[in-house]
Image 1 (cartoon, helix red, strand yellow):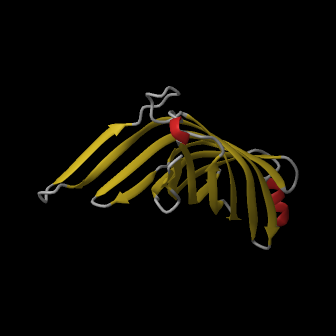
Image 2: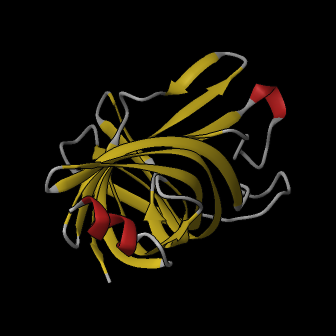
Image 3: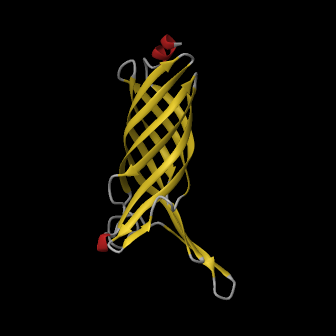
Length: 202
């Protein structure tokens, strides 16, 4: 089995991947915390990964994914949801250890993301017992009139198993940079997510 795994890693491997995550923001300003890791919502990630072998146990892992992140915060009778969608490229070192009929892997590295879509929605109950809902698209850009900067850069860790052509693992990631377009008053937004990914190795 070990020889088969080494042979498989001797050339670039393409991996179709998809998964779900618990996504949130670390959202702050000079007055305190607006949202944190408790204000989470379900996200997802789907796309194509690529493993490039460096040696028998180390690969360089990259790819291209569509990733929905964001947060969901309940406040009295209102709920605020922000769901940015990114194109994301992982840049990881992937360490693989063969074990009997499977392999264990761990990843460490960074990612580059670029915001391409997303929505902000507020909903709740009115004083007369009715309900309301308002939504608008995220305005990406770097000026004070925009909502979020499109470029995201962060780091992450992962661990998982490879069994034949199936790969499954857990990961966590966090932004290194401030994603808020308007930073007046110490305004800061950073993406945080923890998730499960499953892949099929082609």
